[in-house]
Image (tube, rainbow, N blue to C red):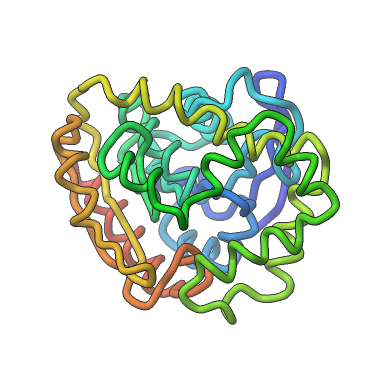
Length: 283
């Protein structure tokens, strides 16, 4: 496993890489408020049979430079292009939280460039139960983060405390998200540009929802993967995803996990990803 940066389309992207580029590729995408360090404990295991790339999304962590837009289809194009530049061919794109929204966009809008997509622990903007999730008072931060300027004003200098609140709320096994992980995540958003980039993902959700609400047949294999710590099930999401056009969709539960599956249940997480990638490779 090596940590590096690469130039792509005027941006600098931080990444963790492992494995032989000749092997089938898996690209790992974090969400909010994480960074590529979320996947550090599982990269080497996945690399025994794959070429693995875990990216910092644009302007987060070791990445520098704002993307043209925070819309998830734009971010998907950027990370797929960067993976291709790094030597990956037809990768499986696996994303958690906001990264899962990007993985869905990769399958929906860039399916010819990837072998499959894994959407983890997230709702897809514009697709049920999107409106129900937005109305849930426990998800108040979606609306707050979408406000202009105010989130930056209130969170700047308090990243660690603010992020710890969400870690403790979203993790099924809080002890799995160690002091080192929490410090790394806070540091990834320490710069003003990084904090803004994270909030901009939420500011783009309305545009994402409008885009995704248009039906489109999606032939790319897709796995919806979810921990069960919050009481929600993949069955709450699969019917609407199929109705939106996902033709080759399956679901799986990672028992005992919250939103930090690579840290909470690393063995189950790597098994699920490796098995799905094998299915995609087999066609």
